[in-house]
Length: 376
Image (cartoon, rainbow, N blue to C red; front, side, top):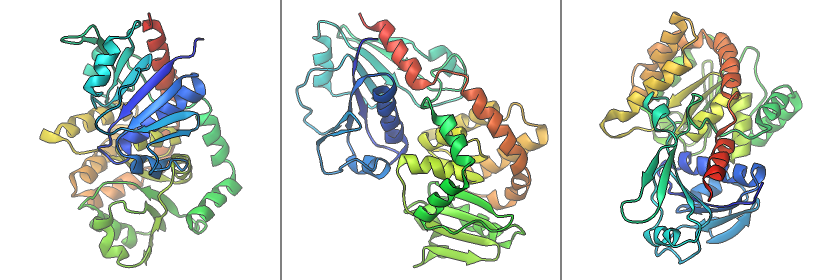
């Protein structure tokens, strides 16, 4: 298998979702596909929050055998890699595109698209788009949930590592100690809350406090701060009734995976944490990134269609209703009881769902094979 070079370009829009995908892809191509990877990112501070080895002040650095470069203007005159990946339509610099067209062997140019379960994705995955002026072709590569798409990012040993962690009480205790979180109470429901600002949160939090089951809700620092300020005020821990609401340090990607594996329910946002929540095989709620003209509702409904396809009608409705209410910013407190009573069944469903998704080769593997076939 010939060693290939790859330039990955990423512009940070959603703080951690897009760079989360870009960093995981870079790591997988380097670790598992023997690619020589150069990652260009315009916001090193966001990358440093999820990659503990990243120096946010260094314009050029080598981390985990990946060359990380600060994407600034003017863009330097460099030799393009053999594979060029622009994440989420971020558009590589024009002088770089011109340099691509002048290579003796034209690079494979990939637009890694946003994740979607919409049916049209199947027919658009892998389609070519010739450049209007230059002898270049861009290919659209779609992550997705069907065999006709590129699948989801998944490291080779991810599920085995997850299972080992979930069966190791000492490893979980080590995580809670690292995050400053106490041991579980009897019959406690433990949740992680990684979401955008949401006006539904105050009423939902009060519902948790007024319930009959002990709940610990863990919130990474800086997340939904305005919506939760009334509870935290100047403290990092809020306790009322059955609820303990606690802020925890913002973790890197590896510890965030462990947090998802260790919690009973995970509220996630953006694309990267959505995918990781599914590999965690635990019940989850997706706070989708709002888009113009409410396009995000189509994506949310399409995902709920495929995710809940094998659920009973009552459970599918309860899951969908709570998801829509949480994303709408109202009605989540009222929808919570019907959703919460099905947590044990959803746990079993999500274990099967993760196994079903893992039947595909994974996005990094498929993308590498796709590019190798196009190299001329």
